[in-house]
Image (tube, rainbow, N blue to C red; front, top):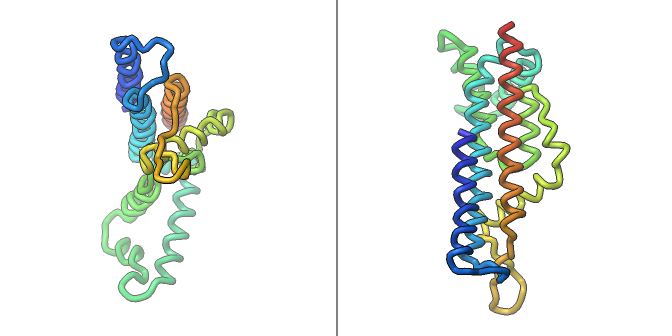
Length: 213
């Protein structure tokens, strides 16, 4: 999946270059339409990272929870927290999870499903969320620390594009100008996000191999 995301993101940056070349833009500033192609490249990269890691969680956590102490500890912590929350709830929600576990043949599968849902239920579009996921998978992803500032900036730009169309508010009465984005900068950030995804996949694959030995 991460490879498909890389291909999709690259196609937007290539389209940017093609459009610039066809209109003989030279050194002239890129238009908003051209910048939108670069913006789309970053957005697709972030979406690919999100989807790939969530799929990785769905596939790896159930297997690792059986053999990896770090992953199992995370699952146990989640279960304790969920049971306490249900105990404190009122009405029909009280002890809901416990009731479910008593009525099924394989309670561990229910717990794993709930845990995976908890890990994948929100958007993985921040360094903090990615670190939380790495901890749940009991892996080290050095890029999360080595490129902390760049990742933070990449996610902030992605969020501005997604939620605000990259509009720059407060620049003058009645004016809504958009942030100017350099293609090279957005492309570098897109590749960084996809490299993080590759690092997650490689680390989990190594752990799965270790658990089989």
